Amino acid sequence: MLRLEDIHVHRGRTHVLKGLTLAVGRGEIVALIGANGAGKTTTLRTVSGLIRPTSGAVVYQPEPGGPQVDLSRLAPEKIVAAGISHCPEGRQVFSSLSVRENLLVGGYLRRDKEGISRDLERSFELFPILRERGHQAAGSLSGGEQMMLAIARALMNRPKLLILDEPSLGLAPLIVARIFALIAELNAAGTTVFLVEQNAVMALGLAHRAYVLELGAIVLSGTGRELAENPEVRRAYLGSAA
Amino acid sequence: MSRTTLRLAALCTVAAGAGLVALAQAFCGDYYLSILDFVGIAAVLAVSLNVTNGFTGLFSLGHPAFMAIGGYVTALLVLPPGRKEMFLPDLPAWLASAEWSFAPALAAGGLAAVLAACLVGLPVLRLKGHYLAVATMGFLIIVQVLIVNLDWLTRGPLGLNGLAPLTDLWWVYAVLVVTLYVAYALKFSSLGRAMLAVREDELAARCLGIPAARARILALAVGAFFAGVSGGLWAHLITAITPGSFSLLMAFTIVAMVVIGGSGSVTGSLLAAVGISLFTEALKPVEESLELYGLAEIVMALGLIVCLVLRPRGLFGSEEPRLLARLFENSAP
View 1 (cartoon, rainbow over the protein chains, first blue to last red):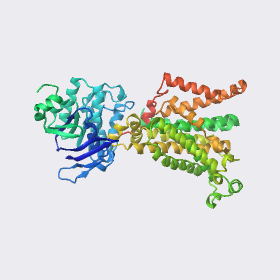
View 2: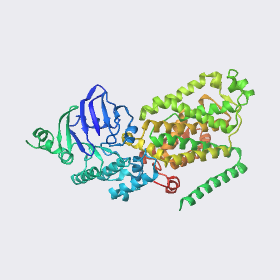
View 3: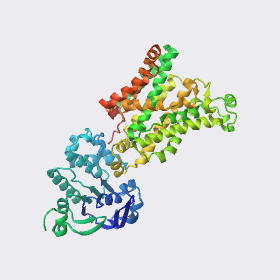
View 4: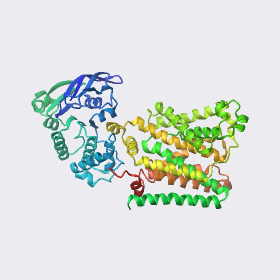
């Protein structure tokens, strides 16, 4: 569904991504793990068009068997319109807007009022707490509620591919477990998920496949379980002796 | 209250306002009428700057520049050919012979300001915060210098005087109503929400497919349009326009109104503009008797500081009264 081919990204004089290649298959949950500064967020932003790669292609096939597009030269709004929603790091809700308004902004590119109403209702079913807080300013929600809002907001675009940047960041373990259960649920309902995580244990437990990113290039890949059992990964990211 | 009732109530409010305008026109003396005119224009300026600065979080000091552009364009279009020949003998023929009526000339002034906003917005809106403030201040100075130096078009530092006193309270009221309508309707539209989203968190907004740069330029252009129109009103109220008419001090005054009222709150900037300009007028006799000119500016600067310390989000924050929100929100989502 999504293929990054030999992506190079420069930020100023820093060569951030050095020939990164990876693929996300339709229906999968794919995790990208790695240390701080490895280029995880940059990878996601390259997919969603917020960063232009110096070279390489981001090949996206929205429909199975349908035409392929190269996202690497498209504007972010075109990429969102093509069915890729990016839920950025640190939750980033619009804090002075109400919960409801946040969700409506998520449907900005859509013009079908009825569909938007239906999806608003669906988000409230998915996250009942958001209905309760509907008219409250988003900034007044707890961290976990804000994360739920950020995910619900990204879903308002009815994405085929959902990109999540550190969904566990700064959340209590219990909340993280709930968020991850929810990601699995969304995936089971047909949304492909590509996520970046610091919390490698959780990410490898959730993901069908995963990639390990080091200094701007993929050094390891495999199924979630394979990587979770790999001694190198265990030593570096899972914090336990091999 | 149902939406129909709300709509009816809104119409009644507008009509009642018109009634007050009629009363004022009939019974107020010229002095009080002119104060009301200035208050109304200040409200148009503050509300329109709020679309630019409040909705998208730009910090533009360029509002007086758009007023100047609108003011000169309106004046040039309205001025009778005879006077133009005397003031500006080198005008191109089409402009020299133009004699528009007030309404289309005001609209043209607004559109000229929009054009300038688009030209200046493209390079300048890449900047943020203080840098943007400095850049728009630079734009204001450039416009002033151009007005001084384009003698054939503007009569240089002398300015254009003896303009027809076309602006009355009816014009001001009509423009104010349109400005308020546009500002409220925009705020509760999908586009307005997108603008507020850009202000709150540009990255997240772009992640949701909002073209942030376009939203900003649009906000700048909408603000510029009404600034341009009020420039035209202003020029035909004081019946003269000079390069110094629209100064940085004025930019400061309008920005103070927006900040005190609450960045993003249309209602807040309306009330702040009315309150502050009435207060400044009321202080004028005091200034004269004490021979302390500039007292109003000092009080306003102090008020701004107090507001920033005690209530940094302004009187209203980004809120509007609930009834207004209900009136303008789309019924479906």
